[in-house]
Image (cartoon, rainbow, N blue to C red; front, side, top):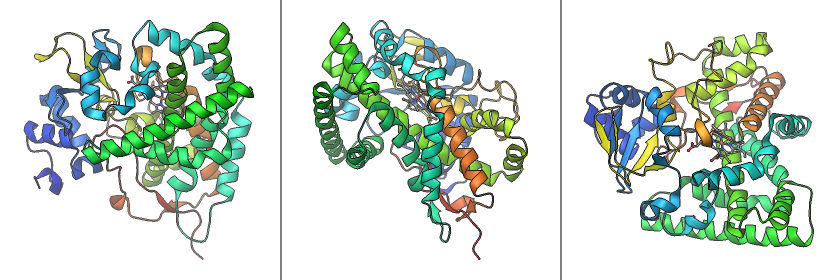
Length: 421
Ligand code: HEM
């Protein structure tokens, strides 16, 4: 155990780099002292991650924003096949033939096909159904004993929404959720990669079968529309269709679920901020943006790689290296946000400035949906259960124990919905 594991601060830049590389326990509990040290003394640093692929981490806001739009820093995983194979094994390739892992012009083509399904107007039309799902889930929660809000509410809500949007039948969601969980949490050992290959194989088989069924019996959902576009215009290959289904499903529920957890946790541990939102519901949209800035659910999950040698702040990122842009660190950069470690639901100018949904061509396609789900989840929960409280002390909160700090979220969120009588 190093000093960092014992939670006594970040004594040196080397310690900070070591913690960011392997995701120590203290770093998982609170990564921000590490990011503060890196922004100050090693804003572009070479990590030594467990997967062994040459990787650079970018932590300052200006650099992060520039990197997310820099055409020399590619998202095209096929151009960096060796690195991706080393990290994820061979199996992910077929699931990752989608917009998230491609550059223009392929990216532009694939994103355009689904873009209109996520327009603010289309998403607005989903509001009544999302409200109904939130009401139903909370109505089923026990009020007599503490519950885990993540498994009873935060996860099922976005999962049901995205499955309904895509057209994944109710009875077929449980296995899929299990496979997605394996994909999200996998490590880099041989055993982990084998588990990953099995889960991805099962997901692939399921999607191939679902697409075949929908071809035989067309539906009006998003998958039905994608199949029609593919059949009528030859707009996507079979692999791209399958992989688009996968990216929408995966990106569409994990991130939102963790963010609902982060929102509830931070509002319950900053009571003055919660009171401000309850007293003035018009503050809610801004409060959601502040939660995404302060404790967003995407931490470093912005895999990219350098197409050429790139020199940034005296550091040369060699061609072929992985580049990770820490949106979590950028969102706490004091050069961009005053008092960045203060959670302030009245903070100004957030929506256009935080990087919690990324930036540039890969800016989150689902942002309007995520914002709507967040608003409904938070309002419904606090209106229905005004006395809700954490059932553990904030220090006991269990943050995700993943081998690579890609996402920021809680393992569990024990709460008492009503005071015990
Ligand atoms: C991309 C965050 C919810 C679909 C991204 C990116 C971020 C992000 C940071 C950019 C990744 C990069 O540049 O490497 C989030 C957060 C969410 C959320 C924090 C929840 C609060 C959703 C939802 C969907 C979605 C609900 C719905 C389908 C996507 C897709 C992309 C993406 C398809 C890839 C876009 C592209 O490559 O052009 N998201 N997301 N996300 N997100 Fe989200």
